[in-house]
Length: 85
Image (tube, rainbow, N blue to C red; front, top):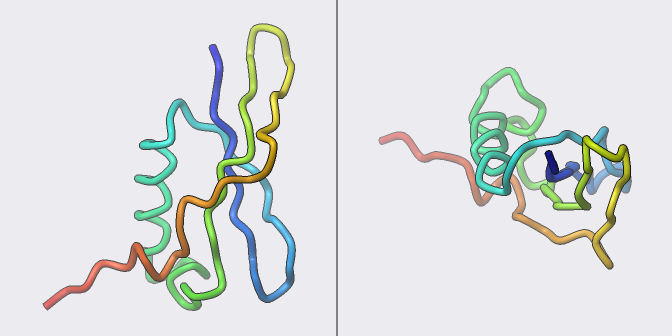
């Protein structure tokens, strides 16, 4: 099975956080939205500082990685903050 690889970039420290593996971009976005809207998460406390990137693909059957030519932004955390009326 091939898994998509994503990582969050922290703009304040100018570095990527530890990557995570999911089955699809949709699953990554759902996880990102949940994290951004979790009041205990650093992403919710400083949403302007974090950006989710798709960085590649991992093949579980071969153990090999395929990187993208460049990381592809999926959006800044502040774009995914849910507004509650």
